[in-house]
Structures are given as structure tokens and as C-alpha cells.
Image (cartoon, rainbow, N blue to C red; front, side, top):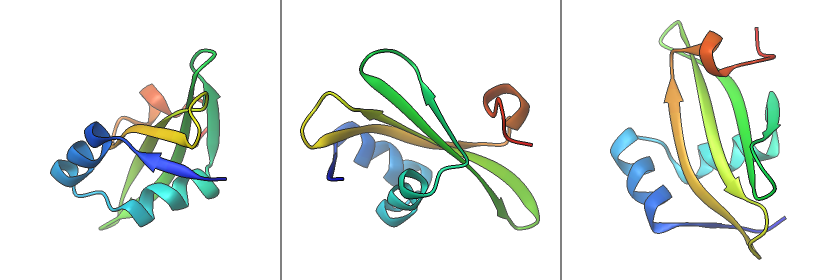
Length: 86
């Protein structure tokens, strides 16, 4: 599957210290995949950093060709966003 990073995603990833490799790994091996609507899919993965769990979330527009990565972030609010994780 081919993916393209939007300018917004690249800017947000840079400001949040998230690499392209990390985002692609999350898409390839997610812990959870959620359908937000007919165009947006959210890939989530729980990752431990410095002995603390973080939930990474990657938003992808699946109607674009190649699929467009819209944004990515990590959060410590696992219960809020990680519906099936943990």
C-alpha cells in the first residue's frame, strides 16, 4: 500500500518529534484500526517510551490515491483514545 504525507502531517510530526518510519510502522502494524467516517481511518499503537506508555494515532484519508497521511500524534490519554487497547 502506498502512502503520501500531507504538508500538515509533516509539520505536525516534526513539531511532535515523530519520524516517518514510526508513522509507517504504526500503519503497517497497528494495535487498533478505527473508521472515523467514509474517508478517514485512524491507526493506533501503544508504545512504551522511558517506562511510560503512549498511544500513537495516525489519521489517513483512504479515498486519496496514494492514501494521504493527514496527521499523527502521541498521547498519554490511553483510556480516552485507545478504545480496545489495554
